[in-house]
Image 1: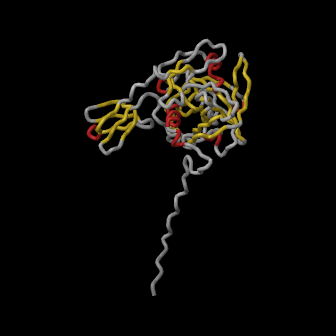
Image 2: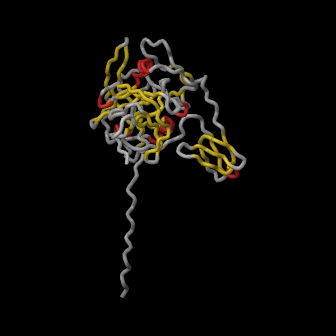
Image 3: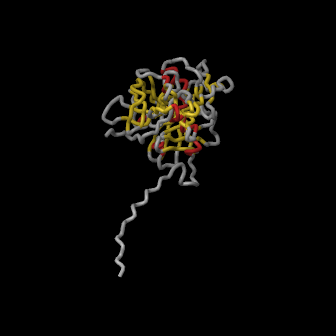
Length: 330
């Protein structure tokens, strides 16, 4: 069995990147996925964790995705001090996080760290620490569920950049917005009254990457904040515990949990969450497709202190009823 070094649970992979079609079936069911091939008698659909082959006679309609309104909802992501370039990204359909509508230019790790490093934060709890990254200017941020599991007293340390210098600011009013234990994802929000508009990072697509391409991670391994590690994408479909992960040679250690894995355009392609303890260069990340699914459906995973049943609460199954021999009737 592969051990996990302080890094938590498995994930349920969703469709990664790209636009998915909806296949309406005759039994009033529907399947959403990427159509890989259409033949006269069957259609092959990639649903993320497997490929389904659907008989043509069971399909009523295949709905193609609508074209994104990229031009109407383009925004400028904040740029680092002294950086003359501004990155144009397209808002997601919900406008909650940003994703590029076209391939962005490749840049060096040094330039990208200066531009987006401010959006990577340190997440602290009484039980330990991890990493995270801000996804919009209002202070919403992603991390791993296991970083905050069982904790309600959470603080986030942000490294604001001004005049070419970094200053650490600790925010104590942090609220849990949504979480999913099974995908090891959590959405937090900084609620401090004096909080400014935050720098944030955009979401990319792992589908656009090829095995062997360079990637890099930023986090706080062992509490060493703003540590940058570089490597390559070893595989996009590493199966562990029945789930799919991105595998990378970028060094991942305790404290990196919840931090971003970037492509060379500065887009998040995964959330680092575990490594193999007895090997080097064997780190893993939750694919960004699963992160987008979690954010798009965050209401389904909403957390509330007033409702202990949120987002999920599974009770122990009832014990089997004992079969007692009937008493003899005299």
